[in-house]
Image (cartoon, rainbow, N blue to C red; front, side):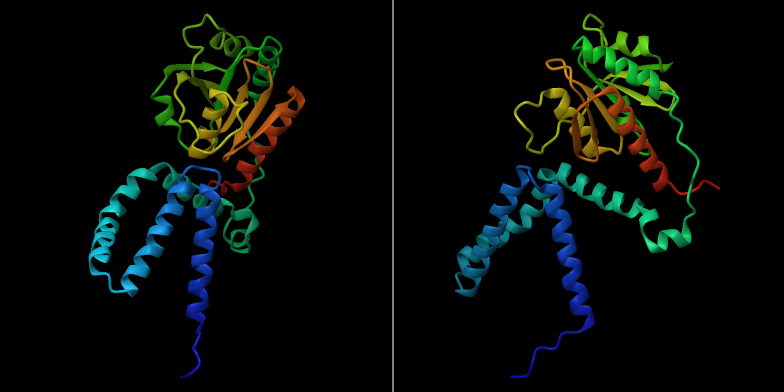
Length: 267
């Protein structure tokens, strides 16, 4: 028996599979999908064993389930597949950190338009003090049209009184999220997807919705807790809880600058 020949293509194949499994684990970590994947892996092991033992009936049954199950998996894992593709997309957009990106993309030093920031921070500070719940999406690159279509069109200039009035408990638009794009409030009472990840029991529906929106889009999501008055910011599936007004402003500026750096210079 000769030695096993390992070529460069074999090594590349192993590396690519390892990267694929890593990103898959990164996306599904902490979700119920990990339990489903464990069951699928166990079923695959059983299939390999029964096929090796020439158990034709079990092999046929499991093989039939596998062929039909591929379609079912696409339906079951639709949110996870979307998150997985988004993670890959976000990695490819991070051009400034790559050697190739420095060659083919110029650094865009134009400062982000943050005229909305001071009114937003002032409104969140006041709502935090009065324990008024709020959920605000700040659009960056991704289109939020699907979310906007679930709410009521506003199209008004951002101002502290307007934001506070939208989330006033007797306002007909206080439930749901407000979507901001640039200097304008685009819509209110928008419905957000809830996260499928495991979160602390202390998180309410607003925090779950904020995480869900940050997983499905690249928007910056600001949350004001109705129970504690804490201010939080969610982005890219992560949430920073218990921010002061100064920390809120710094966090939004940091995330906005980060998005600006990843954007190639417009010609």
